[in-house]
Length: 493
Ligand code: ADP
Ligand code: MG
Ligand code: ZN
Image (tube, rainbow, N blue to C red; front, side):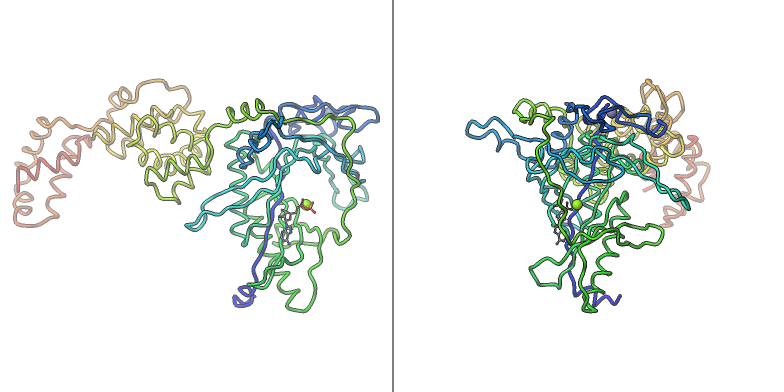
């Protein structure tokens, strides 16, 4: 497609995201929420199999985690306590439809009184802050899983996943490019992980994205007809699918055709979306209130408890890295990894001057060590205290930059409780910073290299490097280079 043609249109994108909440059990029964190890249809009971007469019981933890994520998504619950109000009134509804992965013939979800309303998400993109409104987020039970074996005339259904707890987050149509869509999805991922509301494992489908895309000629106000591409499970796929849809819709419109409102799938290998079903006739789900579950009032105490459990959020980290004057792109690498971000946050609260040192090590060295040693940061012995101390020893000239990495590499193992200074000493990593000792070394080096000393004094800068090198060699690499440089200059200049 010619860039001029692509530039004639503006995309409008809204995203629905299903987040699997990190509860122990399913949403309405005591079956395990995690079926990864289970044989198909073994992690089930009369409730999640939808047997007639079996009664659902709401999982309290799912409500707590949804609230936590709701707060992270910027929902203001205070408005529901104003002028003597009891709190947010939320309830469950039946969404009726027939499908083989839905044994009850309806899904229990929330229709007009969701647990999260009117939030917003903000994240940096291309030097600006992008804001995406959150229309709503509601609790619902997942459906089962269908597989269609290649070349067979039957399909298989596995109900292990039926009624696992989901929070469906619906965004406003606020995104204008595939890049914004991708960055928004990444921010939802950040929030899900920071809040601890979900394991947020994309590989296991803990987060699945449906991307709604329409296009309109630049400058027009009215939205075009949208398509919804379902079940994307990587950030890259969201970006690619959105770009593909934008181009497909532009071509249709340019040929005088109409975009059909429909649900589409994504073929990642081909890099194409494909039509699944038409959505032109509005779905008739005959929603009505779920008679087997009482409404839930979100009280002040429940919100306060969720707030207390929430902890650090990406926006807190961004404020702290900005205050430490760290570049946004490097800060974002840190923010995208909550384990590292938390360690950084603690290092800075103990030793603010180590912000840069800690960021460098966490962003650059730590991923390499994690890969080589097969150990996550929390599993290793690099605590905030260790990282702060190694940073301070480096600033003080006790460790060279190379040896600071070596020392932290030593601590990147399980169960090391020793003091970094003691380990540095026993491993011979400390720099020689004893001025008297080094002055003797410098004296000896000048005596042994009279030609280099004379060349330097005659203005040959390269000769100076040779003298520093000789002094480092004489100290077996342990001399403090800035100190050696100073002593040599004091003596020769
Ligand atoms: P449905 O259940 O039919 O998918 P929802 O209201 O749950 O409807 O979700 C609609 C999603 O589509 C929202 O994320 C919304 O922002 C987005 N959306 C609505 N209209 C448009 C449009 N014209 N172009 C792109 N996205 C849209
Ligand atoms: Mg939808
Ligand atoms: Zn069950």
